[in-house]
Amino acid sequence: MLERLAAAPISDQTLQWARYDKASSVALTQMTNGTVASFIHQRKRLGLSPELADVRQDIASVTDKDIQSDFQYCLDTRPTLSIVGEEPVVKTAVTAGWR
Figure 1 (cartoon, rainbow, N blue to C red):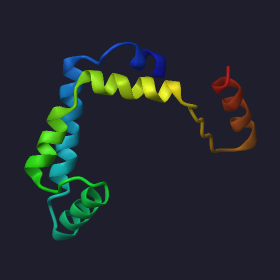
Figure 2: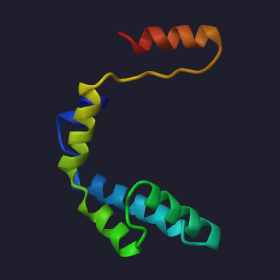
Figure 3: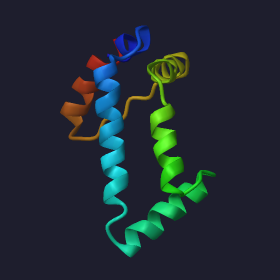
Figure 4: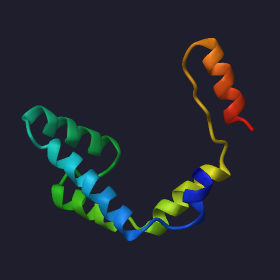
């Protein structure tokens, strides 16, 4: 799956849905004083502007090539497989995950 995502840019429709999903999440963080404060704190901690106009620009500026590049970066590093569960299930999953 990761190889497929890294091989080609995502479709424009998929990118638009991802932008919509992120914008919806941002809108939900603006419902109460507590969530607004948390949103501002998180953005400031990451060195980003908490202004909604800047958030909109951040979301709009992501391109299909940016996403493809991120997936390629993940492939170039050491992917990590995290499996939690009962021992027989974990052993089967590890075997399947590390072919």
